Amino acid sequence: MTMPYLNNVSAFFLLFIFINGVSGLSTMEDSHSVGAPYLTKEGFSEKIGQACSKEDIVVNQGATSPQPNGIPTYTVEILNVCRTGCSIAEIHLTCGWFSSEAAIDPKLFKRLSYNDCLVNNGDPIKAGDSVSFVYAQKSKYPMAVSSVKCVP
Image (cartoon, rainbow, N blue to C red; front, side):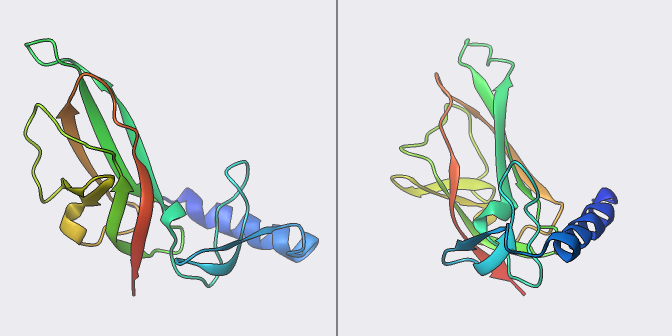
């Protein structure tokens, strides 16, 4: 899946930096990306010449039709939005004591321990691709990216 608008966004971002310099940009320093210029969610998240970061993985989930027994279901989509074309592996999410009344393919998503769930069996997700699954539970589990590994 390609995203043709990214080229225009990248060009605009480079023009923005050329005109305004990088002094107004934030820098992020974590174990995944060191000193990469980027703007917060209010603006761009482009990283120039840097490796991926956990911010390149977006987790969306929403309610779907309940099971016949009335238990609510939720669809989760884990999307690689890396604009530099990076593949990302070893995606771990915070997930509490995640469990589901409906079976989930453990190659797509599995809880390893409390608050540690693994996506796609640790295999890479290419830029623009996603992994999705449906779970059934009385309430929605909050999930957030805790760590990733950049794949060259």
